[in-house]
Length: 431
Image (cartoon, rainbow, N blue to C red; front, top):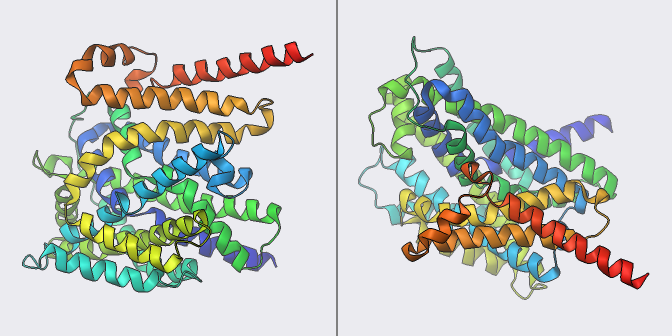
C-alpha cells in the first residue's frame, strides 16, 4: 500500500509539473535572468514569491477548503465564486494561456527550423493533436506523466546542466533598478498561481480514479503531489534564470522573450540548439495545453449541469485558442499584464484566508478583504487606462507597499476590519 501511494504521488506530481510548465514558464525566467545579471539571486527570490510559493500555498488552500474552486471561493459569496471562476477559466483557457502555448510553440519551435511554414498551418496541427488527446478525459494525468513529461524533463535538464558547466568569469551588471519587484511581477505572467487553484481539482479527479475516496487521504495526496510538482518547477526556474544571467553579456539589447531564450540555448549547443529549443518548447507547451483544455472544459460542463457537454467545450475551447494563437506571443503578453495584475491580488488574499480559515470566526471577513482588494485593483486598472485620471492614479500609488505592487494591502485590511466591526456591532445589539 505504501509503495502504491508513493507511485501515485510521483505520477500525479510529475504530470502536474508538466501541466504547470508551459509557454510562460519558458520565456519569462531566461529573460529575467538576462535583465538581472549579477543580481540573479534577487530575481529568483522575487519570481519564486509570486510563482512557486504562491502556487504551493494555493494547492494546500484548495485541498484544505474542500478540493474545488467553488469550495475555495464561495466563502466570499456564491455569485463571486461563479464569476471569478469563469474569469480565471477564460484567462488560463482560450483567451490567454492556451493561445500563448500555440504561439510560443510556433515562434520558438517551428520558425527556426521551418521558416516558410505559415503560423495558421502549425497552430491548426498543434491544436488538432491536442484535441485528440483531450476528447476523452479519462486517464489524462497518466497520459501526460507517461508519454509527454519524460521528453520535457530530459530536454530541460540538459539545458540547465550544460549551462552550469560553462560559467562566465564576470556576470553582466543588472539592467533593472529594482530586480526583486520586477521579478515579483514577472511571476504573475506564468499564470501558475491561477492554474494552481484550478489544477488541484484535476488531482482530486485522478485520485478518485485511483481509489482514494476519503477526504483525508485526498488532501494529503493532493498536497504531496503539489509539492513534488512545484519542487521540480522551482529547480527548473532557478536554472533558467541562472541561464539568462550567465549568458547576459552575450545577448544584444532589444531581443524579445522568445529570441532571448533561443539565443541562450544557441550559445551552448550551436546548430543543435535549434532542435533542443524546438523539443523543449513544443513539449512544455503541449502538456500545458492538454491539462488546461481538460480542466476548463470540465469546469464549464459542471457549471452548466451538463448543458454544455465536455466534448462541445473542448472543441469550442480548441477553436478559440487556435484563432487567438495567431496574434503572436508579444501581442498576447501585452494584453495579459494589466488583466493579471487586477485578478491576482484577489486570489492571493483568498489563498491566505483559506489557509487560516479555522481562525476566522466571522466568515464575512472574506467578502470584506477580497472586496477591498478587488476595489483597489480595479480602480488602478481604470486609472492606468485613462490619462485624465492620472492624479487619482498617483494618489493610489502612494499607498503603503505600492512600490512592490501591493498597494491593495491597505484596502484589504480596511475591508476586513469594516466587516468585522459590523459583525460585532450586530452581535452586541442582538445580545
